[in-house]
Length: 288
Image 1 (cartoon, rainbow, N blue to C red):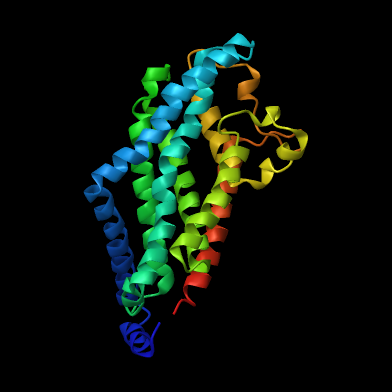
Image 2 (image 1 turned 180 degrees about the vertical axis):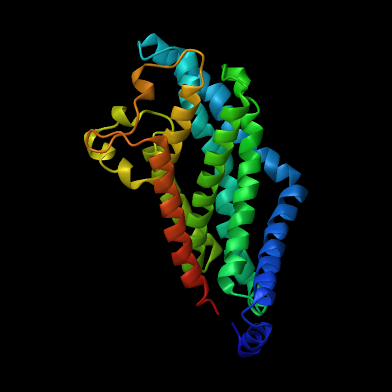
């Protein structure tokens, strides 16, 4: 924050006026992210195309393969895959927030934002919440097609999945922000984030159960926050099915033989998000 901006910030005071200013600034940054989402209809459709093709083309093919090898029915595999597809649908919008931070820095727009008499952490939180909201909206579109793979349209199920998806989207958004406040060049940011997200996605058990992974790989899955997000959503979906899947596909994640509850798994994701946001905000506050 520049000296003039710091002086204006201190002039607001420490009472309700400062809090109102912080909330107003955060809301404006959040609104900017939402406006980008509403105006970029083509980008939204393209981002949704990949997870839908993944579910209804690759998923159907792999489901028949699993059924042929005795690993469960094709419907079981599609149900197993569905939570991962929700995460895939949310991922582009979530990580695009990090890209926007890098682009805003290169274009000079970020410097204009930083002279505002508000905390820089407020601006970062507004961007992360905006990206998470957009990501959740995109995941909701995929969620609306749940009935096509015989997942019941239950209001309680949808409410739980939306809450879990929103938390997962925020975790991915914050992760992208952490990378963005460290990496200053757009090209380098894209490469680093791609290298980082690819193992996180596949180690989460998105496509295949963790139990089917090699021993050396399964040891890495507990360190992946997406593992707990995907598993919690998968167990939520399975709990609301008329006939629950009992194949190895639905084997819960375990810690040395102990199976954490979905609530504990979501708590792990929330803790990761809080720590990552604190790190990003601290680094973002040093941005010049």
